[in-house]
Length: 70
Image (tube, rainbow, N blue to C red; front, side, top):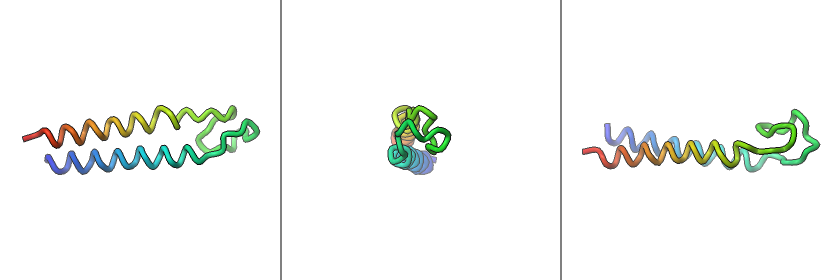
């Protein structure tokens, strides 16, 4: 169980990092209305700042729990 928690936490952290890289490469111009990928019509990339940080934090907590288990 310990190894599974650590592995799952690592996968979640990697997914958060890949989401951050994907979203940060999207165009941020106000002209792309409805065609900006994950960005909204104003070019505001909310997911760049919040969602990947939350995902990586959850993965880190899961890894820490797996490492601390006896």
